[in-house]
Image (tube, rainbow, N blue to C red):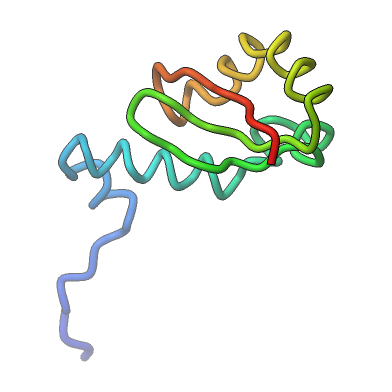
Length: 94
């Protein structure tokens, strides 16, 4: 008979984790699933660049895209809010 090593499901451990750990895991998930969250069209022209507690900086290929996405900022924030919480988004060319 196999010895019980006390293994637990990762989801159970996350549920018991400190809130800061849960938040960080949500951030990692959002960045790793960027295309799923914002959609293929936006993901093809954007790249998450930097994440701080209050701000997500996203790289775009041109000032035209920066302007377009600034106009769609509320739409993008709504898509990432479940993962990152209340956060602002800035678009930079690069």
